[in-house]
Length: 178
Ligand code: ADP
Image (cartoon, rainbow, N blue to C red; front, side):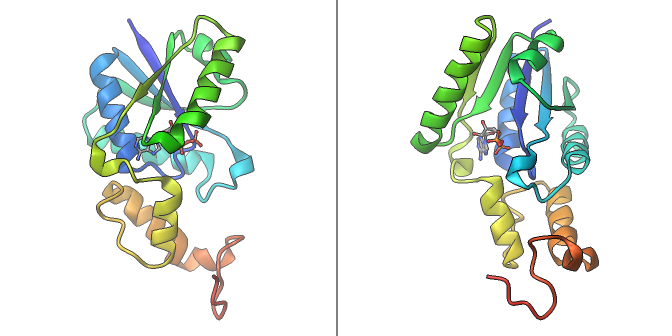
């Protein structure tokens, strides 16, 4: 049984992430989408919300060998704890390369037995990032082509719903924001 970990912030899950999940699910018996706490990135969605979004989308896609989990701490320790032998990351463009290369080699230094694999998404997703999707949604743009529908609705609710006004860092009524 070959298991792989796909770690990330998934704030929120995009069609680019989903593309990588589909590819990994064809290569491995089990894919664990590991949602990172990552409080330093000040996520728009809580850890539980991000995890629930991944779960809902994965179930909707009928991806039976994919599960969502949460992790904090060292990735290589989590990989071992889950009985996996590899980590999968998405590579969009050369701009991702340097950071991902550094991360992969650092993880190898920490644990030689954990391999990192890179998967390239469909070219139409190579420009897509969670950060950009959040920015477009915040400015009232249509994110339908970029995220699963449940994520689109969650973005709408978070950024333009009633509760949006009390979220830190978001423009409140009368505040023009950017
Ligand atoms: P992190 O905070 O760890 O970078 P992200 O959720 O932003 O978490 O990304 C998780 C992984 O998915 C990273 O390897 C990232 O390069 C990859 N990724 C993000 N967006 C895309 C995309 N559009 N296509 C393919 N891979 C992607």
